[in-house]
Image (tube, rainbow, N blue to C red; front, side, top):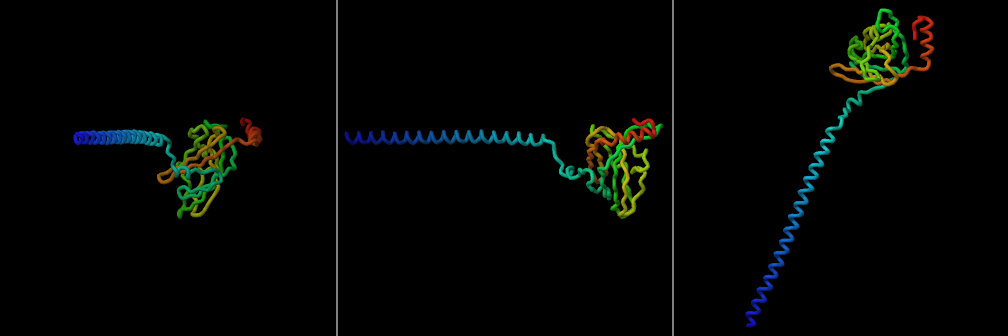
Length: 215
């Protein structure tokens, strides 16, 4: 009897041990499943976030480092098409005096430009290699043909020779003017902050007294 009872107790103890082991295994398995689910959720979340970041970065305007390096200002020497070029900030204003022109009496900006030929042959700046934009971002008409000192009438420079001529274009308003140089091989810009100076009234008075048509 005692032996049978002992056997039954042993079986019950074993069953309890097995039940305990099963419960531990079940809990452990559930923990692993929960951990894997959480891990998957985190991975999916990170994946979506990374995609969003990529989209945001792609939507930003791209900055061209070369473009930044190719922006110049007054009194800064730069090279274009084998020429060393410097735009002076000694800017003045002149009226166009041609009664047969639609630009007659229009105010023109006069910008000194020093050009040095670094080529080993005679050469000069091609007037078709640049475009001028005013503060309103509109292309401005160049009026160099109305002034004898303009680049328009400049002769070719010999190698290592230089001269100072003038760029003439219509006055738009106070602000930044951009001269954009562009050919098949090079692209650069010059930004000039231009304002009508206080002594302009004296200049206008001079023209008014001499021409009687200067506003």
